[in-house]
Structures are given as structure tokens and as C-alpha cells.
Image 1: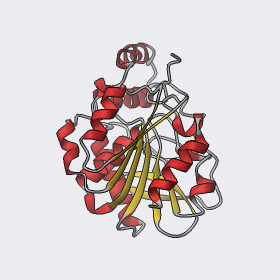
Image 2: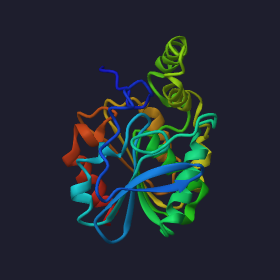
Image 3: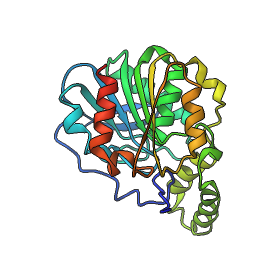
Image 4: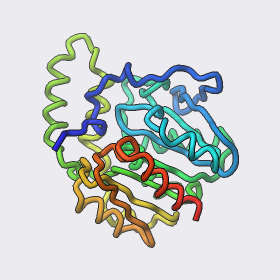
Length: 254
């Protein structure tokens, strides 16, 4: 099986920075500047990207989703066009705080959330820590502890390789991103029991997340729904965008 490393911090971060759109804006949150763009009108829908990417990954979703929702795209700290604060450990708790404050500053008390990979983890943790802020939640390719990843050993090897080639600190951010998924999150299945929002758990049939891990996440959330996309890797929204969009919109518009 082809290894999908979108979950890890070994892809070019520079390549993932998208152009500044005329509607793009920055907002100060937790000591960093988060870049965001908004498309469409109506009920809010926040879309959160994965580890080494940016919200540009949702290019196949925005045109369709923005017909029904006010789509809010945000680059997480250190990714895309958002800034990064060195010396502050990158954790999912920190990013959940970022997103929570981001929503408050945009005067959005409650939103639907679609999260891919690490974005799905942030979505799950936002629903746990701030249930009042999540209407419906969709995750694809999310895990709740590092060993839920099939190629967990590769992250350990990547950490060693990045450290050995970091003589001038050129890999500092990549190391932090890799360590994020190497060490976090640290949830238990029982932690998911408190999620109150209607939830759809998704994955590809050839995902980087262990199938039994995805199944246990689904089983741990009350009245959750499960969708495994055929002929899809970890990149469900890219490999199979038409089916992905149909399933997600059907769930969100119920």
C-alpha cells in the first residue's frame, strides 16, 4: 500500500502556503496570526485541515459546500499563511484553544465542523472541551492516540532524521509538527462518550488510520454515523471528492 504522509510533517510546508486571497484576513489568536477566508452565507461550517497542509486541501469542497453554508477556512498555526510561535510546544489542546478563540473573535457561537486528519482530531477535542460550540461534526482520517496510525514507526524514524539534519534549525517547524503526531493526542475511547453533537466518522478503505481504531471511535460516540469510502486512502476528500461531498452534505443537511 502506498504510504500517505499527509498526517506527518515531512512534506514541504512552503509548498502548502496558498496565495493571499482578496477576501483573506488575519486575526490575532494566542500569540499568533491565523489566516482565514470565508465563502458563502448561512449556517457556519468550519473546515480544518491536516498536519503539514493548509486549507487549500479543501478546494474540491468549497464550491459545493458554500452553496449551502457559510464556509470558514482557517490555516492552523505554522501552516499555510498563518504564523508560528517558536518555543511553544505544539499540542492539540493548544490548537483547540486557538480555534475556540478564533470562533469567539469572529462572533460565531456555534458551528458545524469538518476536519481532515489532524483537523478531525481538533474537531473531536473541540466537541469534548466546548460542546456548546459544535453543531454537527464530521471527521475523516482522525485518530485519538498515536498508535492508531498504521505507520507509527515511520514518525519515529522521521523524528530521528529531521533532528540529524537540523544543524541550522531549518527543520524546527517540521520537527514540531512531526512530534505533534508522534506524542499526541492522548485520548481514551471513553473520552469520546461526552460528545453531544451529531457526528459522522469517515475514513478511506486504505486509510493510514487503523480500521479497528476508526471503528472504535465511531462506537464510542453516541448515535454517531460511520462512512468508509471505497478506493480511498487517507486523502478521502481528494481521492474521491464527489462521493465525499455527497456523504458529508447529506449528513450536514439532514
